[in-house]
Length: 79
Image 1 (tube, rainbow, N blue to C red):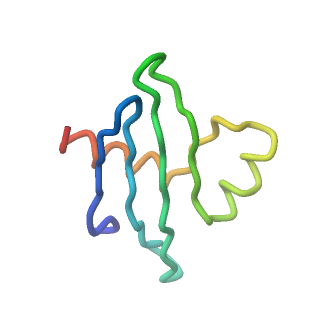
Image 2: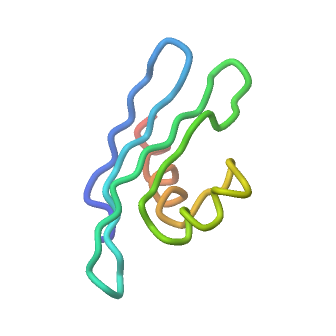
């Protein structure tokens, strides 16, 4: 299991997902966070320290790496 746990917090106007995802090949861990706005159901902010996110977020601020996608998919079960 590459995601130990996902914290899902519901705030006044946004949903917050947080988790730590483990790499399956090189034993790194990626703590990540993602916020979705309730008013327009859009991604407000996200962060993952992986290289894929760092490289792509510069040109696309809605980019989601596989670690963020895994976090949201696991977190949806908690809502």
